[in-house]
Length: 120
Image 1 (tube, rainbow, N blue to C red):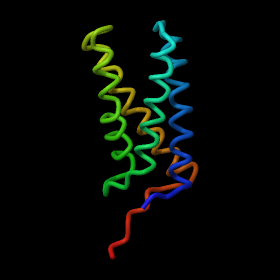
Image 2: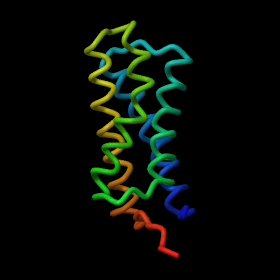
Image 3: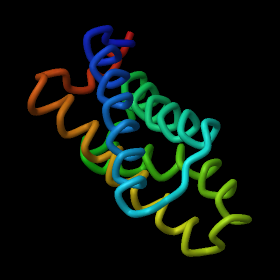
């Protein structure tokens, strides 16, 4: 069961987190091409989308962390040729952090918690 308010909030938060991720990378001295910039932003939007449609039966914060880790894997593998294992690990860690923050803000600040499907 998709909760529309939650889905929209999570997607918007994903976009905001993507912009913050990009700005944080620029501040840390990472060179971004146009493709990497949009890939970074849309990866975080995709994490927000996944969090918004998912209703795994688990603690909501663990839920955000796991989805952040899982949906950052493609971007992390893509970074292996640029920065090696360190880039992979950093992207995975920040994927977990952004997933945690999206879930935390959606649930506590915007009052849009997961709604589990009711049994028929």
